[in-house]
Length: 135
Image (cartoon, rainbow, N blue to C red; front, side, top):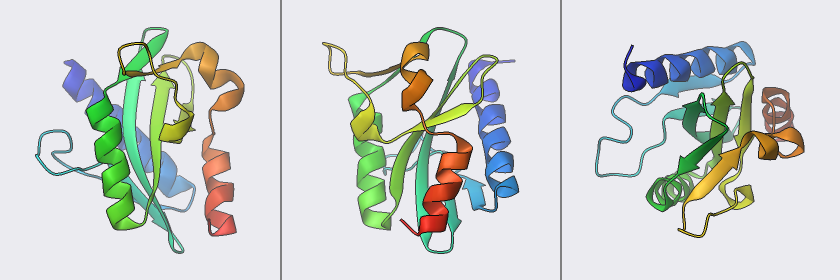
């Protein structure tokens, strides 16, 4: 299975998990391939909109380009959405990060490590609570 197909499969898995948590969620076909800013997943519940960029890896860290974060933030501003980067390391659950909480490397690339997940990443239950508050 190619990296692209594996990524699409994990995105579909996350859409299913969001649906199970009561969100209306869709995977945005072509995200990352078009010139317009576009997240991988858009999820909504009772006025709370989430724009989600997904990353999965077997390694101990995942890197996100400035351009991807800028596009996610730009889309979120236009849509009135809360931007999140969803990260899934092998054999772990999904964790969610607001872009402002993700550290940068010295090359202006964002990095999420397994170490950062412990204690800093939001879980699906945390997103559920955010939507209940009507944030």
